[in-house]
Length: 70
Image 1 (cartoon, one colour):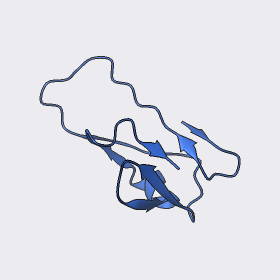
Image 2: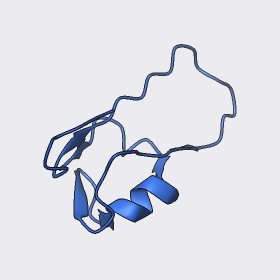
Image 3: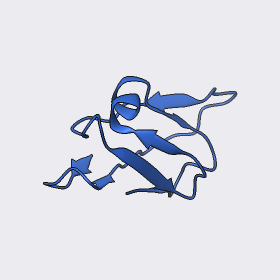
Image 4: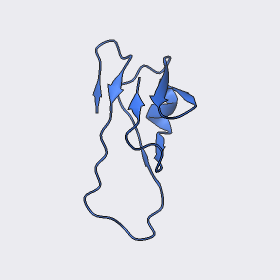
């Protein structure tokens, strides 16, 4: 994960090498965001505050892959 100096944008990578059968959804916790900023994930309708993304995280579903946080 890389966060811009102004903490307005971030780039997150998630890589799964091997497929897992009947694998449930996972969460990824982000770090280094500003807790007071509201972030949007390109391709997802909702917006999220930085503290939410750092403490609760993003549930990795099929529609979240290839999304952009900005």
